Length: 111
Length: 113
Image: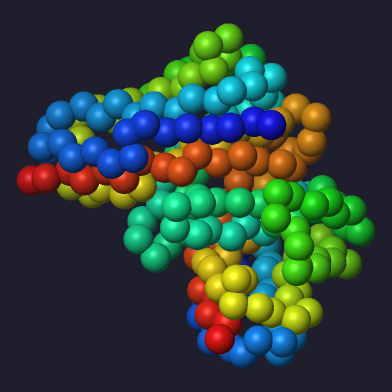
């Protein structure tokens, strides 16, 4: 089954403790992206990747890192999480000119 | 900077009525426009993708139109059902960036039996 898989689905952690949210897709898509969704602010793009080793900033990249060492994986790294990064995070992938497929989301709470 | 607006923010209709959802964008230079559905606590499901050269796309009870010159897209859902209750979002892709998507805030739809 074609899917985008995010882990973990839920995480409660503390300020400053490094964390990684993994994202994997099984559709051989070139394009992958991370978004955060906040009430009143909607969906905002954090980073995206057009292929292996090619990444670019979205609208809200501060405080986040990404890497694309393999085509199927696109982890989101929070080196020193802060409470303002508490949010619902989505990973998405797409082939060129194709609709984006979204994961089920990761709800992060940073205390 | 591209801005995407969806009005109304919320909509309630009785079952069987047709739904009309609006999406407007400020910069007509778009690569494509996509409509999504989001159920509470879930990810986004792609409904329709319209390329900039197209005027409309159809899938079952869904029809989406695109008027680039006026910066508008409309999603029509025929004969609404309670299962259509969800939040509907539109997103535009800029032509100068392969991956960047700009989302609207969404329209929350409730279809009452």
